[in-house]
Image (cartoon, rainbow, N blue to C red):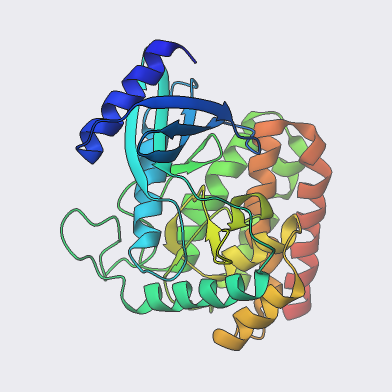
Length: 312
């Protein structure tokens, strides 16, 4: 990153905060595969800066909107987005800096996530025309599209969860996989679509604000012991998608699930839908990172087939 880019970031931040700041330094912060991340130190405190040169200027705007929406329910801490900008092809997002140095606290995270899901499911009517939340007549989705990693994620609002999941989640990833030449996915596509209808046609979830990309790398604990979440791919959907992904790549302790269920119990047949929800992320990894994820996708599609057969 050039000195001129940092000056542009400082200028944008000063305008946003309406105060003069002096840059005191910055250093990289690890943990991300897609963006470069930095801690920026100034005379007004520290800030978290993400930058990307992938030519997707709307990506950080969508992330900022997701963070703001999550924060509006005041149930779980997340960084406050301050500035989105672009300088000579490099996009950036500046947020408040959360010192993630606390001891693991998955129990409190589970309780707070359940509260977020429940609160947002019952109060997500749009507050005004600028709200990202879908109208009550089409509760699933979002008023704008965003990204899951570097993959565009469509969020066109839908009245029925089955329709939303098939049209806005599974079908785009299946098309990408087939276009990328994965014939094994094409071979199982028709069965998967039939099985999805069987698994979801009678499922009537409330539309909760879901993080959308809740794996262990997108959570932390602040110095004061409060959990925090970040890097959302937010939309309004079945809360089970967050629980499913938390189990796909591990990193969540048993206390997380105990406290979540103690606060807002999952449906008894949740585990029948878990592989279906996680297939979305496995297909996305396949499309982003290549054939190392093909076996996991095929195995999951076959597992969904077995689960569906057992219901008949």
